[in-house]
Length: 440
Ligand SMILES: CC(=O)N[C@H]1[C@@H](OP(=O)(O)OP(=O)(O)OC[C@H]2O[C@@H](n3ccc(=O)[nH]c3=O)[C@H](O)[C@@H]2O)O[C@H](CO)[C@@H](O)[C@@H]1O
Ligand SMILES: O=P([O-])([O-])O[C@@H]1[C@@H](O)[C@H](O)[C@@H](O)[C@H](O)[C@@H]1O
Image (tube, rainbow, N blue to C red; front, side, top):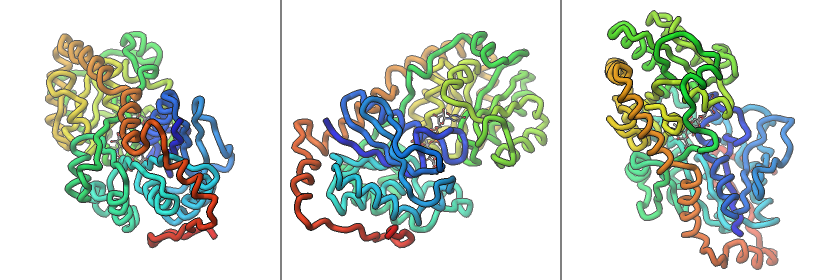
């Protein structure tokens, strides 16, 4: 039985999703852990305690645990401001490793990669990293709006140098790692993200719409995800205006996501910005801001929609288009990142340039004007999603990556450490990265 530590500094599988900091990484870590545990691993997820009332440990399936790490205030801290608290995080994880070692650490995001690199330096546990988002790519697209500290890039460079394996989520992510970070291709493995068939399956549209209390006529378009400018929701609203005015199709747009379950521009400024754009474009009546929704409500939203739209500026993978496909809903998405692999242009949906409302409107008009094509795309989408992208398959591939580092017969690192830890020579944690401090 392998002992795996999954580090996910700011993205807990227990968090509410749809706000600025809660989305794909939370889902990834939670699903990966569940499926690894189902395959027989012991998995501890280390994530920062971001509320005072959280238990120290929460069970996560049979053999899994979410461990809340006291690092910084027990309240919300923006991920951009977390670096100074990572010293406490590292020391906490090291204490766990010393009590009972892990065979492998899997870090998620650059802050967690810093933890994994320190753990490797001190107790020699190998590590795998999935970045989920890369600092240089973010800088390229967000420029001055990127508020992460300068140290992020050096930490990512170090993680790329020191990780035993790096998981890329799509060919574009692989290229970014190689070209922007000089990552050694021999240590990169490309494994996509997934969806859970227990959460997402096609429901009939009338049933799904009745479940959500949606009435009225006209096609329904859906946008669902974290409410941040780089998701390009403004372009979806502009595309909707062009569609309604140009082709006369009376489509409506539902926008799911935000910091709270009712849309509140004070809590989610991006919603306020989008509301103003809908007003200016003359489509405020055709756009419904729903707020964030829990996992159990999403199947109905995806199934109720005629088309799912996602037009981010960039996307390391993009889980939402997959979830839509699994519900039999065709996707019109930006031709960027992982969306280029999941959406088969002209077979399960269409790919459009990222910031191009006229191209989006034209594709929507094409699709909505041809109900037979919509149905055929939807059927193929379910097939593609189910045959290639379940979390069970993802976990199998990730497990194979671990296997390269921990042989199945388990001669293991953990055992080596257990023998060695009887010696008194235990190296101490010395933060090498500027900007962090040890807690004591
Ligand atoms: C820039 C960036 O870093 N993007 C990546 C980020 O996910 P990011 O959070 O940007 O977006 P994704 O679309 O991948 O995932 C969003 C997730 O949040 C869920 N959700 C959203 C709104 C809501 O109200 N309720 C809810 O449950 C969605 O169902 C989905 O499962 O990590 C993912 C996993 O590595 C990648 O696929 C993304 O490419
Ligand atoms: O888009 P971005 O803000 O750079 O980075 C994001 C994280 O902050 C978010 O918490 C996580 O869920 C996403 O997977 C992604 O990694």
